[in-house]
Image 1 (cartoon, rainbow, N blue to C red):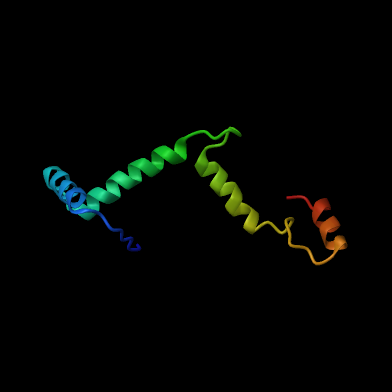
Image 2: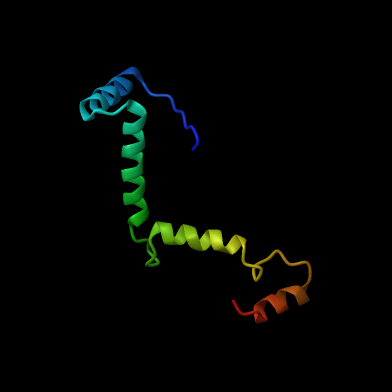
Length: 86
C-alpha cells in the first residue's frame, strides 16, 4: 500500500468529510472508493483501436519484457529478433 497526498481547498475537504461520515466511513476510505470507481470506469472504455485502456496498458507493459523489441546493438541482432517466434 502507498500513500498519495494532494492539496484541496477547505470546502472540498469539508464536503468529502460530510459525505464520508454519512456513508459511515472515513474520508480516506471514501476518496479511495471514488477514485477506484472512476478508474475502473475509465479503464473499461474502448479506445479507437478496439482495446480497453487496461488492455492497452497491459500490451505496453508486455513490450518491456519482450526480447524481440530493441534496443539492438547491431543489425544482425535486429534481424534475429525479427525471425524469433513469441
